[in-house]
Image (cartoon, rainbow, N blue to C red; front, side, top):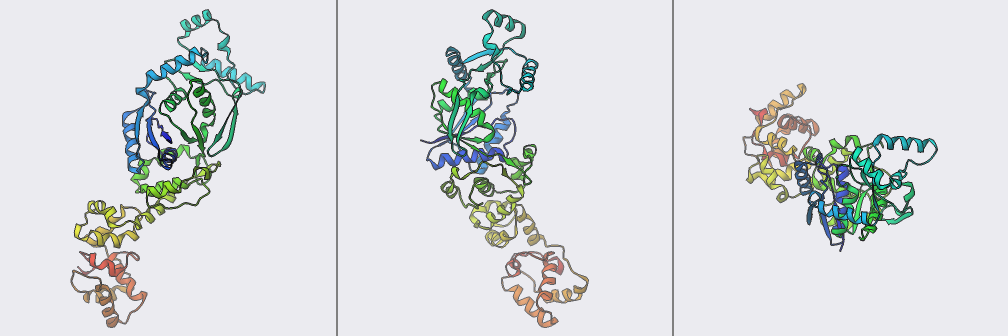
Length: 441
């Protein structure tokens, strides 16, 4: 059975970059009729916050990315200790005492002689008595995983055949000096225990994947299939990472972006398929094919989201928005008619408040100087409400007969006088909803 996971750290709100990873894992799981795990990676007690964990879940639920199982790494510390002990017993985990300054000097020397800045494994040559002395002077050291210096290979779901020479990579630190287990070990232990079969994540994790494959094998676990998606860049090709705070799911939600518009964009962005506005999650799952995604950096422009949102809203029937229309103050008896009239003239649901304000309170009339006498005469011919779908046609016909005006010169001044705008819904549809006409008062 296909099992995937989304493993955010609760150190902030999730953004479009996180969403890309979450959505791909969700779609892979659902496409394989499997399970999607939400795993909160909260082993860092200083940076992890419960309020961010709650916010992550709230954002995922708003998007419709429902998980089958929730896990928290902070509840699995004993398991990580067991995994570390097993690696020590196998001779794959060793303690190192170099300070950050000493490590930096080593890297500089290696670069100066044209070598990659890879940890030199000096700690392996330290005797037991010397380790005791260093521990008494400096405190506990970090624990590094001893990589087998071989070429690590796998077939990536997006990148294709991928390999990394382990000798070009430093032995990764798995446990910090303060005893905190780092992501690299915790993630592997979790993936083994939770029977994760597929891992989809950003291409910045490729080197991590190579080392985690060796760690998984050292722990006797099954290595999942990996796929590394491209990273997002701005519309100009520039770095997007510094602007991701403004592109949090929470911020986009506040701007009125609809979940299906956002998901539709992210489900196709960076693939060989064109952007398609999906009507529901089932269609999105059916159409998803991770092999169609490319390796090049993917341009993301938030401006694409509002047109998609508008198109999505235009397809919704009244039942799908009934509660939101009611919250805007629209009486139930007018709700469906109001929605069918207004939906083609909004970008986000927030816009319906403006249209209901126009209907219920009237609009400030806009009357050009050359039209003042004409509008005044026309308004005398406008009957008192309530109005129906024939009111606009009957009224403008009578105004045309009385004034001789026709075409745009007839219709536009009257629209602007009644609505304060030069465009909007068909006036024959809008008139029955107008409760107040200020131009007449």
